[in-house]
Image (cartoon, rainbow, N blue to C red; front, side, top):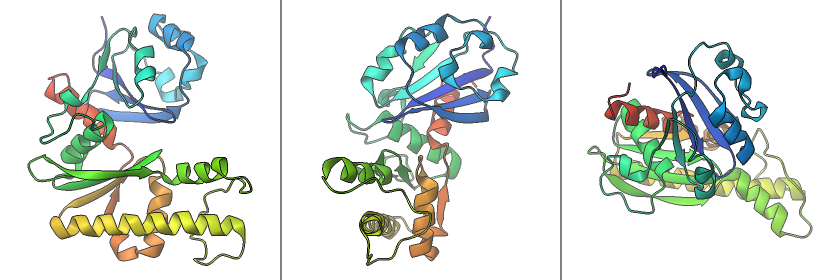
Length: 267
C-alpha cells in the first residue's frame, strides 16, 4: 500500500522539469532536471525502490535515504502537451488542469501553471496579489480579493531575450547575465546588449508593478521563477524602494499544487 503522506510534484516548464518532494503538507526539498526521455519515464513507472530509479532523475540525497513504498503519488502540471503525454502511463498520476483551479473569471487559454501560482499566492501571501513569474517567459498575473482573475501580460523572459538575440543575429555572440547592472550607455557590444535588455525589462516591471498598486494599493507582489533572484537584484539596484515591497517565493506553483491536494482532502 502506498504511503500517501509522501508525494511528488512535477511542474513541466518550457525549458526543464521542476520537482518537489512533500511529506504531507511539508515541502521537504525541490530540484530541477532536464526533460526525461521516454525510456527513463517508463523505467520510473516500473521501479519499486529508489535504487531502481533512472539516474537522469537526479534525486537529492535526502530522498534516497527515505523509506516508503513505491510508486509514489505524482501530481503534475504542464505547459508542454507533448511532455505531458510522456507521463500518462505513470502509476498514481494526477494531472492538474486549469479546470481544477477555483479561479474566477479565468479564460480557456490561461496556463494552468499561472493559475496554480495564483492559488499558491492566495494561500501563502493573501489577496489581492500580483504574481510575476520570471521563467522562460516573464508573466504578470493579478487576482483581486475574491480570487478573481484581473488579467496579466506575457513577454520573453530575461534569459530568452539574450538567447534570441544571439541566435537571430549574425554578428552578436553569447552574452552572460551580469551580476550587477551594466552602464546605461555602454562602450562595447556585450554591455550594450546587457544594457538594452536589462534596463528595458526592469523599466517594464516597474511600470506593471506601479500600475497594479494604483488599482490595489495594499496588494502583495510576488516574484517567482528561475530568474527571480537576479531580476530582483536588478530591480533593487534601480528601484530600491519599490523592490523592498516585492516578495520572492520560488515555490508558488508547488504551494498551488498543495492547495489542490487540500481541496481534494488528500493532505
